[in-house]
Length: 320
View 1 (cartoon, rainbow, N blue to C red):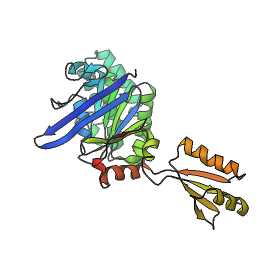
View 2 (cartoon, rainbow, N blue to C red):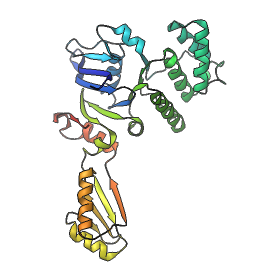
View 3 (cartoon, rainbow, N blue to C red):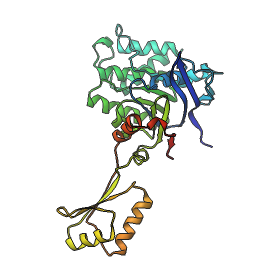
View 4 (cartoon, rainbow, N blue to C red):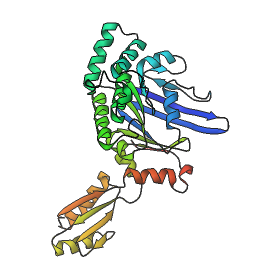
């Protein structure tokens, strides 16, 4: 049985008549990056706050376990196993970066020596040594986010919740943050990431869930989610007009582009469909000079699931 770092079943949260989470199921494997996508107000931050013990789920919620601990029965054990970096920085602007780190070490009850050693190691790792003695108010957005995550790591958490960690960062700082996240996972840390940047989820996440109207609209790997949306196709290009005509005769469903000698065949990109296509070409004795697989991107998936007609009436689709 898979050992999940995070598992939640029937997660619910309402504020009066407003339902924010309406029976959300989540399962995150250890040592992976799980990304929760959703529009503003979809409930991403509410989910993070519940899973990190900052707020309580509704009593009607099912089982929630974090790092093997029951969230309701043993919240203290959950807190000891996790780290949280929220949308808004926890950095104190009135003190230096080093002092922020040492304060976090005190909160984790590290000895003075251990706290200083951990602080020095993390400042080095996050390229903050030169700025360590400067007030945090002088830091750039990227530096503040790096310091924020460094503070989160003081307690050596095995699960980290990153709630939109790159919002407002410039592209270079965003890519630096991506590298930090990859390094954490390479060390065995589990990352639960919420983001509005579809490129970010596509780049980082092992699995992605799309949250819409309080429910998970779809879940799976980025590549498999893309295959849920129509529009995928295989493009075959030829340099020999005779080979092109032979392929067009064999592939009656293909859309022709006689000018560029190219055929476009609808496909979900699956191994089965590609094998069938190549089999038809082999049987016709035709070899394409170029084969390109095109699939919808995460933007297409996101808009189809959160803005398309009737999306909320469809059952959850899980791709494994």
